[in-house]
Image 1 (cartoon, one colour):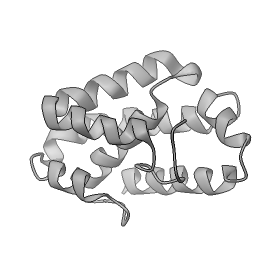
Image 2 (cartoon, rainbow, N blue to C red):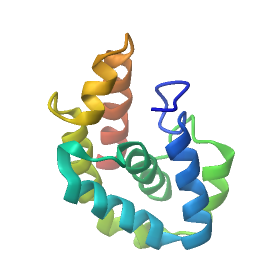
Image 3 (spheres, rainbow, N blue to C red):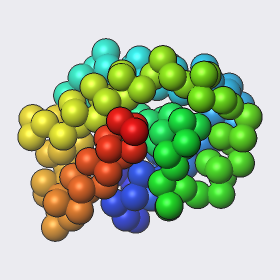
Image 4 (tube, rainbow, N blue to C red):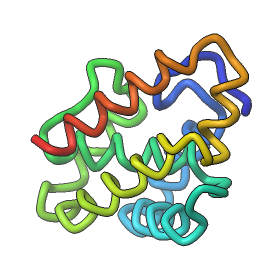
Length: 130
């Protein structure tokens, strides 16, 4: 993981994902969510998936206080109706990531930040459920 913090956008993959959304729009979000759900616990797009879920939450009116400017400017192009179909799949995918058997969870378990990361994912789940 090329990351510098526990935040949803504090890693290279998430920031690269924002460029994909800028280029491809909603298609990039849908493709990332679908790919993550297909790959399940061994997903290699977990960081991008979390970024996609953050965008879905933000467009739905429940943005993280840590949403980067790059993401905030992108969400202005979308409406809650555009992303409503992805709320439940995002919740499912986040629960997959929280499983101790998931690759991403295993990577965070090797750090001292596991509990903080889990808390951040639970916060995202709560925002998606509102």
